Length: 225
Ligand SMILES: [Zn+2]
Image (cartoon, rainbow, N blue to C red; front, side):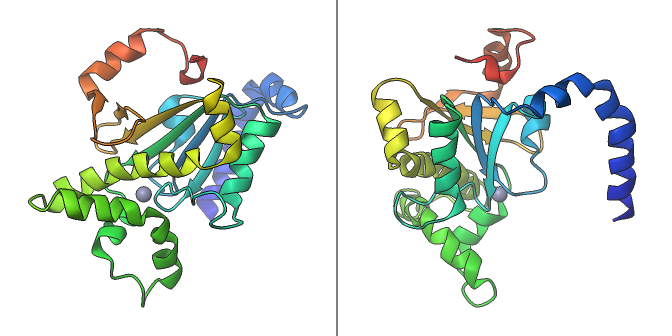
């Protein structure tokens, strides 16, 4: 806790005082242009990896970057999605999985019911991921299997995202884009996948990512339109 208090002090003395104008503007309202959905894993920092400032990303985080299908629950995810699209007029959504995801590891292991019944129940919204991997990749195991499941889960959750009426309507009229990302903790890189359904197609390998960034050098990610 001492570290956090020290950090608060440093934030106020350094970052806040040198960005006073930004925070004054933010106090009048928020206009984020990206809805960023990712895992609550402590090793991911959406603002850090995209080099964005407060006010630029509207963020939903939970174990496994899961989006329960529309109507499956009255949870915060649906409310945040609806708010992002209807109230904030967000037109870009990123669903970002990550390497070494403990939630997806738990999903594949399937042994959480006794010790973590709430996590076990939550992961049911990723059951399609487990089933797709189990039935289609019988010869793959270990870390390769986990990586496949992490990638596949991003696509499964994007399918769930499409079940929201506000998302479906905006996709239909071409006013919304959805992106499938996987962040690699060990390299700091992001692999961008086609958000379309199976088979998994790597759209940009990590080497291409630099090229893809080079399209708009110096532009932050949210400049995509
Ligand atoms: Zn995770």
